[in-house]
Length: 488
Ligand code: NAD
Image 1: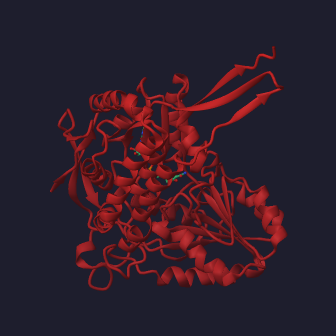
Image 2 (image 1 turned 90 degrees about the horizontal axis):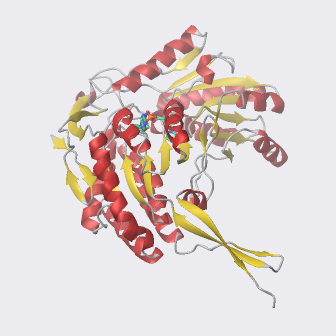
Image 3 (image 1 turned 180 degrees about the vertical axis):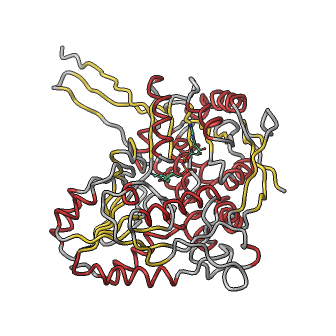
C-alpha cells in the first residue's frame, strides 16, 4: 500500500506525529493508500520553510520564476497518463475525463500564470502636473492555499500557480479525500529542481491541518475553494487577523432554457452541465428552468440522455459516469434524493444504485460508490431540494412562463456562482444575463473557460475573484509611490 508524504522544504517527509488517514478508492470502496494526518507541528515546519524561501523567490526575476514553473508544467505534461490514472483511482472520475480535462488543465494553469508574469504592466498616475504616482505590486508573503476533492490537481494548481507566479511562497493543503496527485506533483517538483521551500504541501484534515494554516500568524493570505460552511469558518478565523482571503464556495446554479432556444444543443449540453464528473463540479447546473411550451420536451430529452449514460468502472473507456467521491458523500446525495421524494418530487430516472454484477457493475466495482443520474420534476423553486447544494448527479426541472419569472426563480437561492441561459433572442440573452445574480453567466454554452476572465461567486458562493490578473493581484499588495515634481 502506498504511503503519501508531506512535501516540506524540498523534501518528502513523514508527519511529525506519525499518524495517517486511510485513503479509499471510490470505485472499489477499498483503502488503497495512507495520507499524513498532519497537525500544527507539520504546518509550522512548512511555514518556516516557506518563510525562509520567501526572500529569494519574491526577489527572483519574473523570468526565473517563470522558467521554474514551466519546467514543472512540462513534467506534469510528460506524466499526463500516470497522473490521469491516479486522479481516476483517487476520485472516481472517468479516466477519459481526467485525461482530457483535469491534467491538461493543471498543465495550462501552470503555463498560463508562468507566462502571464512576463507581460505585466504597472499603473502610473500623473497628478495635476505636481506629482507622479506609480504603483508597485509586491508579493503578499506566505500564501495558504486550500483546495477541494472534486477537481483535485486542476483546482490545486489553479491556486498555487498564481501564488507562485506572483512571488509568494506557498503552504498548500489538498483535500484529504483526494491527496494523491498533489503528492505526485511534489515528486515532480523535486525532479524539476523546484527551489526548496517555495512550494510546501501538507496533507491532512481540514479542521486540523487546514485550520492550522488559516490561523497561522505568518500566513497573511488565504486562498480557499470548498463548501460555503467551511468558507464561513475560515472567514471567522481570518477576519480578526486581517488576512487577505479569497473564497470560492458552493453553488446551486440555474440553467434557463427559453422556448426559442436551440433545444437540441440545450438538452445535449444540459446533460453535461448536470452530470459531468457525477455532478460534482461547482459550476454544474443543478436547477433547470424550462419555459412551459418546451418543458415536456426538455424533460423527455434529459431523461433519455441520463438513462443512456453508462455508469461503471471509471477506468473503462465507455464509462460516462464514474463513482461518487466517498461513502459519506454518496450517503449525503442519497438523503437528498429521499428528501426530494418527501417534498413531492417525481424521480423520472436514477437516484438509485446500479445493479451488482453480473447485470450491472463489474466485480472490481461491486462495493464502489455508484449512483444512477437523477432527473426530478414536480418541485417548486423554494423547496429544500431546490435551495440546498447537493453536489451530485441530481438535477431538477421546473417550468416557467415568462422572463421575469425565470429570473426570479434563478435568483431565489443564497448562492450566486454561475448560470446558463439558452435562447436564440440576442436581446433577451443580454437582458437576462444582466439580471442574474451570478459571477459567471454562460449564454448558449457551458464551461467554456478562458483563464483570463474573472472567476468566482456572488452571495454565499464566495468572496473575490480568481483568474488572470484578478488572481495575480490577489497574491500581491499594491504599494503607491508618490514622487513630487518641483517646478522651479
Ligand atoms: P470542504 O469545504 O469540505 O473542503 C475543502 C477543503 O477545505 C479541503 O481541503 C478540506 O480539508 C479543507 N477544510 C475543511 N475544513 C476546514 C477548516 N475548518 N479550515 C481550513 N480548511 C478546511 O469542501 P469539499 O467537500 O472538499 O468540496 C466540495 C465543495 O466545494 C462544494 O460545496 C463545492 O461547491 C465547492 N467548490 C467550489 C468551487 C468554486 O470554485 N466556487 C470549486 C469546487 C468546489
